[in-house]
Amino acid sequence: MLKLRYSQFKLECGTDEAGRGCLAGPVVAAAVILPNDFNNPILNDSKQLSDTKRQLLRSQIEEQALAWNVAFIDENIIDQINILRASISAMHKSIEGLQPKPEFIAVDGNKFRAYKQIPFKTIVKGDSKYLNIAAASILAKTYRDDFMESIHNEFPEYGWKQNKGYPTKSHRAAIKKLGASKYHRHSFKLLPTQFRLPL
Image (cartoon, rainbow, N blue to C red):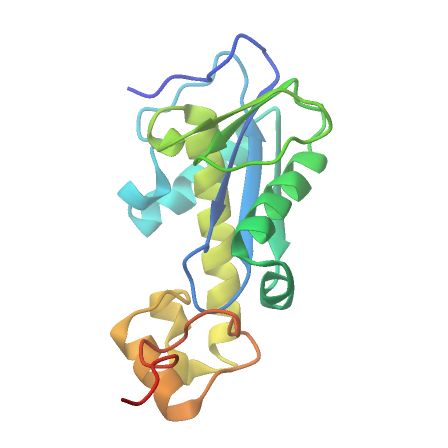
């Protein structure tokens, strides 16, 4: 059973990102403040749920949350500043759009940079422990999946509708055959053999 929040602050936001390990597309973060009486028996870490359940939960979260926001950092910025900094930047951007402003930030994972002197706590596997982080994980994942499906038709050969930009065998085979697209993260190791020197 997930707890509502980590701290005693009523205006605690949970934040999480999606797409950090992808070879293409943006990293997307969400921040969510849930009301005190929020309860949802199926809400869990987005990775544990089917796409249908994630979509259902997304509309429930958006209707019932006190505040929510989603932020995108694209592949060009990821290449410039690195994926960890881009992920934290996306989280900051998602928190910035919240109204009311949070008094405390519960962060999924173990890396974060302080945001405007608001106290925070990093929580490993926080999306399977706290409802507000789980809610953020649902929004980040569904908005990112929607984006990857929207660019699929531009480059259908990479199979983004199915793999969402993650490094599957078929995705890597397409990169090997066609090269990288404008949505690929060129700072990433797109092919396993790419940096191996000949013996």
